[in-house]
Image 1 (cartoon, rainbow over the protein chains, first blue to last red):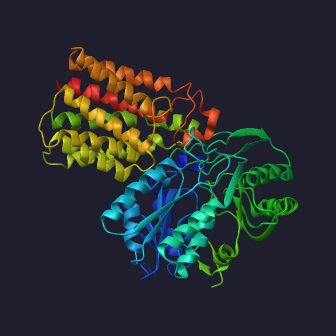
Image 2 (cartoon, helix red, strand yellow):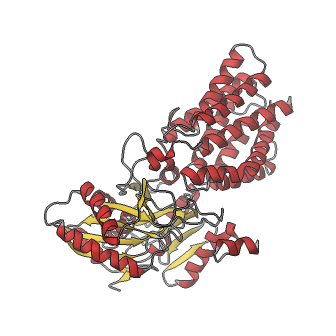
Image 3 (cartoon, chains in turn red, brown):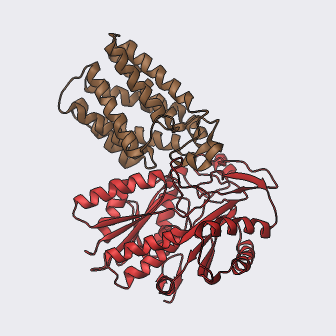
Length: 340
Length: 210
């Protein structure tokens, strides 16, 4: 056991309890913001339910921290439902979260487009409706590396999830009703696109083995957030060349209007230092301007990760005044805080 | 066949999932995210425990209990898919205490229908349907042709295993493997593999009971 753990280079007590023990730590670190319901395996905003406020919940497999538990708090999520590592949560978690946060104004489920997440959230939404709670669901699918066609499960939900949680969370905090908060999530999803690259795979604690091996000098292009290989493998070029690929993939699909004001989100996959993420941001900022866009807001850091994967993703969101206002509104969560 | 058949079936699945756990993880790591073996093992361990705690329910109710347990313990896509499958199958049997071969076909057909409906998958998409559908068809055809149940189930298990292998050259169109596009070709689908194990476990359970 001990030997195996050391081979994994992970801080573990028991691989089967890694999610529960981590959630307990999140709650212990931020008792002013969240509480951990161990029985329901959910993270709930400290002051939930807020009477009359539309509530937002999200969830998905663990291993993407700080997503989603780190985004519970003022101006963002009301609850998060973490599944096992890279495994969607079960409907009982989403039902418990929905009941815990419903303040009478309805609950929005923000669902990343993965077959497991979609199916489990669907069952939970049916259960919640049976209990008389108004629930709407929005599926986030911003990853342009996957073509949305009959031949795939559709585009994956990645970086736009973080932006949707922040922006719609602000709308809800400001008193918007269920239809408007739901519409805000949809607008962020429609106006955002993402593309990710990896320089290494990652090691899920349950198996202890890297999901794939990437030879030195190679890069995986078009990865998701589950340590899976991407759409193709290529020789590792300079940061500038890699960012060219990312920007081209995102912009050619988003097709922003000329002179569009955008939010550029450079996200680390867990194993890439900020030193490199800011280097990437410099390239992104320059290339977006060269392509006729104005990056008026940005987010740089590791916010939707894939365990210890080395890599980065770029999300570009085309803004309007209302979305910009919601982005700037106060937020106070374990992982994101400003204006408070 | 009766409630004991269902309990034995679930125990056989639990044994098979433990034995094949690492293999399923390996298959899933190649084209998914490597959690299938862990999830299925966790789910069927919980099913066996839940059935042990049950006091004399009829077979249909045991299947519903097993399905509900899978939904609440597995997560991923397999949890809702197998959970709904067993619940739909269980509903076919209602309150009856025993069931025969043709009713077993109806149970499996209902399970298959619910998987195809929830997963919107068809044969050839490189999913569990590639193993389950040929098994159901083979069992139905065998019994219609007058084969005895043991033989028809053996043929169904072989058909599921052939269906499982048929996924190797396919390009995935559903689930996480579909993100890989052409890179999913050449790998056996983990969901079809665990499905073949589940059908084989049924064959073992029924043969043992009779």
